[in-house]
Length: 469
Image (cartoon, rainbow, N blue to C red; front, side, top):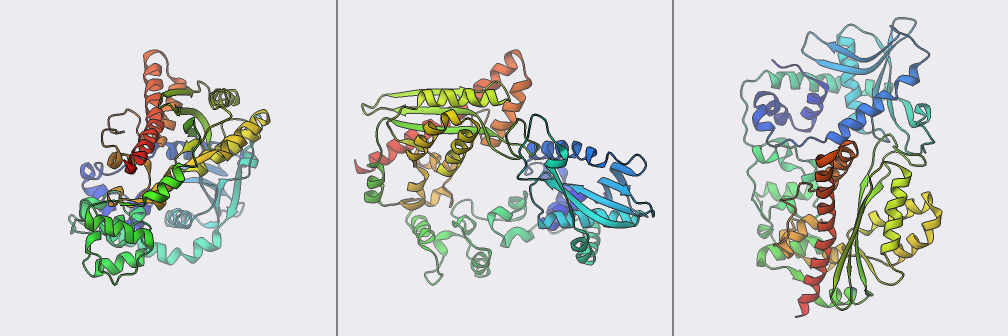
């Protein structure tokens, strides 16, 4: 029987059948699992900064990444075990997040049980997490970056429940076969689905009720209890909000719900030239440069398509070559040189770009007025697809990656080397340490991806203009 690791136990809590599939049919599970390398890297980096917190102690009083295995089959590494003078231990779990979440308590409880079942006596349990208010100086100060929080009472309060869950996970792992038809995620909303959801559950390929925008779990279960799996099958007596009703109507008719007059009114507020802007940003648990906070988004790249009133289109962009404040300033300087004092600035999900502009204005006050002026001129193109253009083919989302294939099927991210913002950040970090042709290839991939983001907005804008024709 496979050992039960902490990671596997947390997977069991999300979806027991996914745990079984991961261990008994790993080749199948790998087809569905998407690894988030950046979060793992951040976790390891945060752990390196915990060691100075225990400098007053010397081995064997403190053990980092202490391996443990129980006779029952639990196997884990405890981030920090600190031995007290009376022979008991304090247990520390290290997290790269800026707050303590419910699953962190379960995580720490698993570690506590594994420690005690290995013969250790645990006195207190702590979670070490990142301080959201920390602002880095010239170097990282671990004592300011990290916070210790005692969670002993919370861990002990859920110990009996966690022990029962551990028994359940170990029992499941011992099974040679399970019923792979359906899993516990069937009645959950999309954001709570396990990675292998489509392996276990037979659901419609399009217009499924799981795609209904902002559907609650309680409403989802009402529909599923009536064996309603498709949007067009939702009966009239089910209460829906306006956006949900529009999405269902679109699914039934096969046509989008388009409010042409409100769309025209929104577009008529725009002033030429039109600046279609998108940032790519990097963030990390441990701030990479002075005057920044944990997980602060640092722009390293922008793409800007400029549409003039005569219909001509030009493109400008910039990609930073260094992970420094000077690199950010170079991005900002190139942006402010490219965006004139007149014209609307069109973005997708305005709060993101506005927040980046505010943060850069604080870092570089000499650009603050220009950035505030840009923010005053921002128009959020996504708002049209939230309020006045509803299409069931958007799958209940207003993400540009859902809207673009429907509105402009000739454009696609699928063939790009970089296909989303997380991958862009990861590749930029790789590029900074690359050389020669490899560095150039990554640079070109990043430029191509970001350029498509803004060109996509141009084409969507044009498609909306053509609604009246």
